[in-house]
Image (cartoon, rainbow, N blue to C red):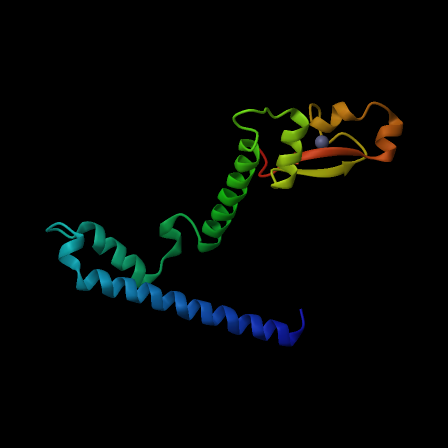
Length: 148
Ligand SMILES: [Zn+2]
């Protein structure tokens, strides 16, 4: 990255951090101003939240803002895939090839060319019938995200 691009990116990220801190403080002030509406006599829930907002302890939330963005993108991808499958409802059906095409179009399967099986039992292992197939390259359909 060029120095100028890096400087611009740093300035952009610093501005984002300032904005996020402003949101945290505004949220803490909002809760403080309307304390009675948020809690019981002991103030347990809001007190914890205010401390987290004021101190900004990301590790206490169990996720990061980046992970949240990724989860939203994954939900959108899955939703568009489901919409593609549902296009055949109620009068059609979906065969394996159509399902594979939809999964590729929506990023749930990622085709990769292999010259040897990835592993015993991998889907590519059954497509490669001969050494000529493997020399030419066999498509392996990788699941995204990978199954655990
Ligand atoms: Zn494979």
